[in-house]
Every structure is written in structure tokens, then in C-alpha cells.
Image (cartoon, rainbow, N blue to C red; front, side, top):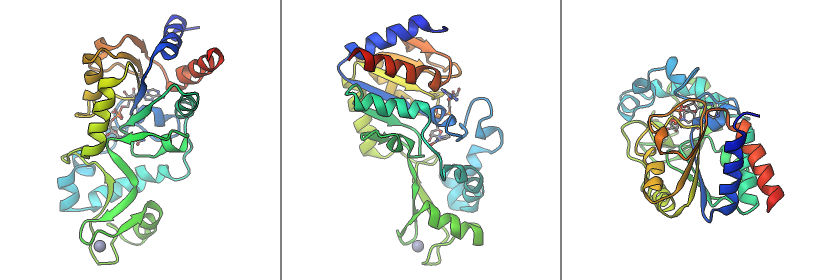
Length: 252
Ligand code: NAD
Ligand code: ZN
């Protein structure tokens, strides 16, 4: 089997570490059918991120975002957690995972049973009117989207924005500081499905490293900071996490 040695080392690390966290990105949701932004087949091959996901472009004309969302976000309805999500849910259940720090905005870690999910980039399930503050669900707004683009709030305003971080916006303070605290006190971090190019989120594994944390990478492609990892798997999350967690469960 490929990566047999690495799998064995990872099982040992999981059973011997005190505080384990996962740091995830779009790659873990790729196997749920949600495309990644970067990497092969990523969304940015089709859309210009400056146009569809920046705050200045949204404020200029919210249709820039909603036209993209109609295509991309429509996949968030009826998606199920991937084998990678489910394995992390199981790892928490058996007492070996403290928290999941995620860059994802799809809510799939919660659906997989993880109870402490730190969302660095927010979540697109809640949508708020920037004029009057009224909240909507994704379902509500998609219904409005069928009638007009951009969708409109009951107050007449047209700036309905998901509670997700757009390019040009700061990260929400509370989750960011919670993630940094965890990075400082963890002794094992599983980094799964992230290109590690979006900052400041990508700093989290670097902070962990500088505090002596063991780092494991499970990503289809290389990242710019691969040197910091103790164990690297260049493969799908589903090829590694379910069998590793299964093995750990057998040992505990
Ligand atoms: P990214 O799109 O930049 O990179 C994804 C990485 O995952 C790539 O390096 C790719 O090689 C890897 N990958 C693809 N399939 C994989 C698999 N099955 N197993 C393991 N790895 C796999 O993603 P990112 O680093 O999270 O990018 C940052 C931004 O993209 C975040 O801000 C996030 O909010 C946003 N995003 C979120 C979602 C989501 O919520 N599902 C989807 C797309 C993008
Ligand atoms: Zn309003």
C-alpha cells in the first residue's frame, strides 16, 4: 500500500499526542461535490476572484457576487459530508480531536458531528442585509434570486451579503484568536485540503510549528510551505483519514 510508513507514523502520533486539531480547506469538501477555488478544476479557472468575491466589487454591484453564487453556492444545498469530514467527526467522538479550524464556509464539519468548529471565513448559510441588518437563510435568498438579480431585501435594499469573509475584509476576531490560541497549545495538527496561500488563515500551521507542534499534510497538490511538515500525503483526504481513524479506534 502506498504511504504505509506514513500511515503508521500518523497513527502513532494520534495515539501519543495530547491536543490534536485539524486545519481544513476546500479540498476536504471536494469529495462532497463542492469544487475547490484553486488547484485542478478549481472555481478560479472559470471566475475572476476580484470580481465575484471581493468586498469592493460586491459593494459596487452585488450582482457580481450573486451571479457566481447562483452557480457555485447552489451546490451547497443537499450536500453530505465526505469520508474525510466523517473521519474527523469520528476522531472527536473517540476523544482524539480537540477542534476543527476551517477556512470552509459550507457547514459540513458540523454536519459530520464535530462540535467545536472554528470558522475563520464565516459561513454562507446566514445572509444579512447591509442596509437594515435583517437576516435571511440561504433558501430564502435563493428564492428571491430566481425573481431578480441581485436579490432584494424587504427594506428595498439590494446589498444582501452572506456572513462569509470576502477578499478585502478582515477575518472575524474571535475565531481568529481562538484558532491562534489552539495553534500555540496543540501538539499535533492535521492540515487537510488547503493550498495554504490564503492569509492570514495560512499562518495557523506556521504558528503551530513555531510552538513545536507536529504537522501533517494531506493535500492533493504541493503547497508553498511543505517543508514545515513532519509527514506529507499527496493524495485525497478519503485515502488517508478514514483508515487512520479506524486503526486508532482499534488501538484505544
Ligand atoms: P483552495 O481551493 O485554495 O485549495 C484546495 C486544495 O485542496 C488544493 O491545494 C487541492 O490540491 C486540494 N484538494 C483537492 N481535492 C482534495 C482532496 N480530495 N483531498 C485533499 N486535498 C484536496 O482551498 P483553501 O486553501 O481552503 O482556499 C481558501 C479559500 O477557499 C477559503 O477562503 C475558503 O473559504 C474558500 N472555499 C471554500 C469552499 C467550501 O466552503 N467548501 C469551497 C471553495 C473555496
Ligand atoms: Zn434590508
